[in-house]
Length: 369
Image (tube, rainbow, N blue to C red; front, side):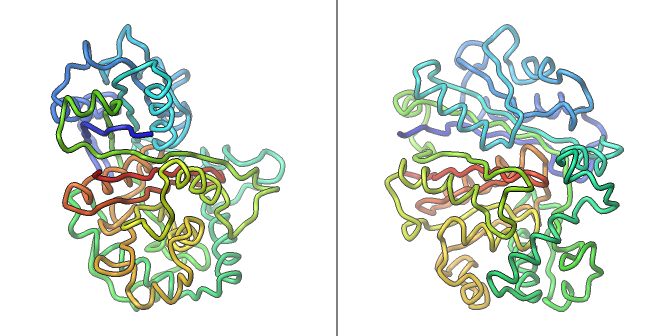
């Protein structure tokens, strides 16, 4: 399988976009993507996909608002209630099945419009076991972080290393609103939100919209000499909160196994990684799940996850620097991977997580060749 990325567009990536609605953000991102791909959405795009969720939008049947801003009015348009990487996988199926030659995948978020974000997250929990009226929506992440640290013998200081690395690397990323130069002590001395996570260990929400234009291999070569290729893709869920294993990212283990098989590649051949770091411990948990390191703690302390190391992990800052645009988080990581490959790296893996309270994630293997 080889699906080409022939255009990308994004808009926003600020804590609050006050002068544009989510539909206007979608339009701005779409316009930029179509300009880069040099296509007319009304005549060249066969299918349109938008990743969105009624609860985030605050609108019932929000998919009715999807077609117009992305050029899909009166055209085949579908929505995916999931992360953007799940939308990409759906787009790949459209093209691989022959339904489409060019497919647009869009995802967006405007959490600054949501007055009761914690309550919506609470509503996503299991009604019997999860909705316990917790005052802190991050409590489940704190529980899992402790479980993961015990299992992998990770210390609180290791999490601070992740934060300092990603915040510093984000200084090179124009989308990174939360990049900064921090010391390990700066992180260690921050106030806990929920043990063992400080406010610096938790990615902050950000408004943003992203559009990716996919094409079949034959069509992609007509539009550009330098497409980024998707050679492996999958997404998976572990189970519900009661049955999933805390401290293990089984969703990414399952998804990456299939993606590696499709791409005919093994983890040792991956040159860079763009993986979910919604919480600092998640980056380390996801590195293990993707099989990118045999000793995560040692590699982290030796600086092997920086550019120039064994495998750069989130070399453009990840979600800790860029922010977390809800359902667009996976596409945000993909945007970083595309930028990195266009600057010369050979290949990359993208690993997303849909966030609390889910145990769902997606994986893409992308390359320049």
